[in-house]
Image (cartoon, rainbow, N blue to C red):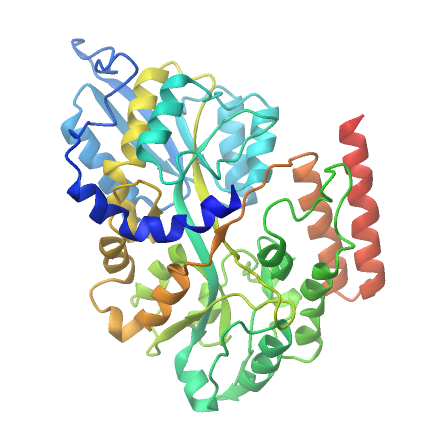
Length: 456
């Protein structure tokens, strides 16, 4: 399956051209079902059905345009979009609203750990139906490969593909005379971060930010190992004693050397999930990114800056070690198992995944729809003044890397608990409360205990 996925990035780029040559009659994917009849059961009713959709992307960044377009062409089904902030507080608010019975027909989940929790809590409708299988095969790139399944069931469909990498302040690189080497290693990443650490106009500039995902170190291990990197192949033991996790841990040396923003500052300023304010404020020279973060780079009103952003792939552990797992399928659209309008919700879900996906380019979302045009997406994501803000060729090299493969998690035993253990132990390590050896040992021990507990 991984071989199949490895060519999807290329297929995605040329897919739109091939589709344009086909003679197959176009269907409207948002209104078809197994019988070929319209799925809007109340089309003759006087009052429209109202759907409520919760998502983490600000409405003005694309979702509201998508909803407005749907509402204009579907008077029988009117949709309201509600934004929640995709952090711990926002996700708790969403979960509370669903469990209290508030009307939420569709919502977005941004991570396997949350998906697992929500499946276990009975919030998600099982989407394993012949209708959905046929829809995915006909309309979604990969035709089902890369879908995350929880305990064997399909509970959500990814709406976007998210390659990721490192974004860098090109002005700082040029001033320091630095060229990012191809297939750079973590040692080279750290050396460059130290070279970029300086003072400018009396302010400290850190070479890098190394904290991501609510408190974890940059995940060099995942880029090398791919999905399920928390687990041994057997699935009944954690993998935190793998050598690649030492590469993640090694990055702390940058904090110790004053070349990466200290954990205390990252935490207090809530930069552990979204580091773009520090990057765009020229407080750090490089940080991780995915295309959705570029909407902030384009936002010169709230984040004024005068430098060009360039891009590089994630570093690997050492020379010669492949690290091709640098893309996710993400932004999972889910149906509330308690929705009173499942047929209508399904129709809107299909629209979001296909025709409506173009409205999400503005938010930096690259559609999984087979017919999506990558050139159109690139132009929309980088904006009208792309050359003034971005190194466009470097962007394309990272985003459309033909060697890139999707990270697919297939093992989810105690996944939320393992992620929490990893965060807690990483915090202890970043705050110098544990040594490197204690950090890795404690993480491994606690993770194994959580897996055993879940398997009992």
